[in-house]
Length: 360
Image (cartoon, helix red, strand yellow):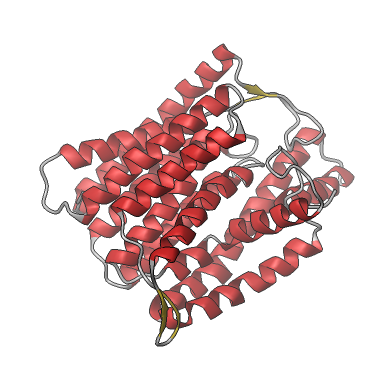
């Protein structure tokens, strides 16, 4: 799956435009089928909004992957295994997410499908050893079990964190382009960055509809696929290119820390953690910021949009100014990846606790 030079630019532009158009089609479909998120006490939105729009960029992306696999080109090997993993495992995640966007799927069935998708990824892609400290590497069959659990958690936490306008879209684009930059700095070829850039372009087409105030929400099919794809990319690049899993964990820090802390607090309190709620740190921040805008005389709806923009742009700044430099250091010095990851997460954890994530 190698796309080079101007051809890559055209493929990315086509992916962006098709995603933009298909999201409009998905919105019309959602309105026709009554797939509407109506505001309630746990909602971060105030008007009825169509949902399930993420299926648009996912179908465009998977279609592009299939085309690139079938098109005559040099390469193959690891690239084809990556595409096959995203098509098979990612396809399962999309199907169960699409069904869940239409009707409630039991948590057990969703978990089983996610586990199957994770096993597919670990079967088609090797699990690299993880350097915990210079000269100390963790490896073995048990690490694959940890990776399966981690991949399932990643695709679910991405769904949990898709709770305000634009947050999942912008975070996905930021992590993907950040990883591309790290790969480029490590002199990796275009075959490493093509699938990441293409997915970022497809998400960008959807984000124009999802930017505050959102005209459509992503839904489980889209958010679950992004989480799965990021985990698959992490496994693939850690095996074939000079970028460690620690770098990916650092790039994903905002979502990992917020979702993990909130889940832990809710489980400790005996709550049904898998049920919808509005207790994440970013949701607390959005409500507090909205109160500030309301006090300044803004309307409820405009204050909500401004608050959502403030939160996601604040997250963008954290990604660029704090997490990305540390992810680069982890790629350059993988033996210190664990220490750098802990360093990256510490201020995020302090902030999450300070805003009362997981609490009412």
